[in-house]
Length: 106
Image 1 (tube, rainbow, N blue to C red):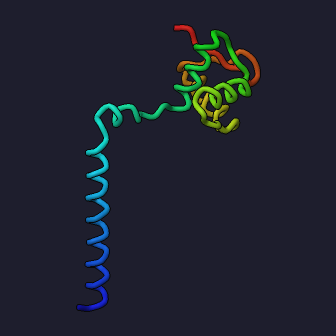
Image 2 (cartoon, rainbow, N blue to C red; image 1 turned 30 degrees about the horizontal axis):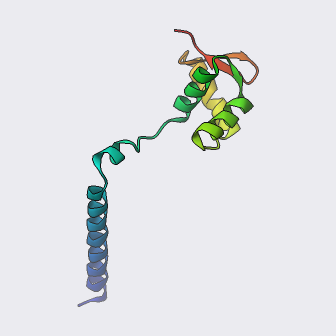
Image 3 (cartoon, rainbow, N blue to C red; image 1 turned 90 degrees about the horizontal axis):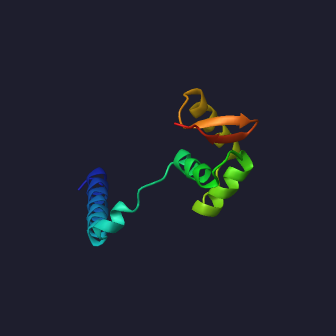
């Protein structure tokens, strides 16, 4: 066998092993566990925090509440930018003061 053929055979066997392992592991998970792994977006987390608070919150308070409730540290600049985009689209948030956001009333 040429060196290229040996390498390709090795890579194929490793890939097949990994694929088999993935198939076995996913079959072992109960269906309920697989559906619970749905991710929550940053905006969904912020919306829940603001809904629970019942009033607008400063960006620092939102970040602290998300970390407390969801165990996730959000980047302040990224979150501010994402909220600003949502506000421009007149989506689910409003700005009531500098860096203070609330939920848009439907």
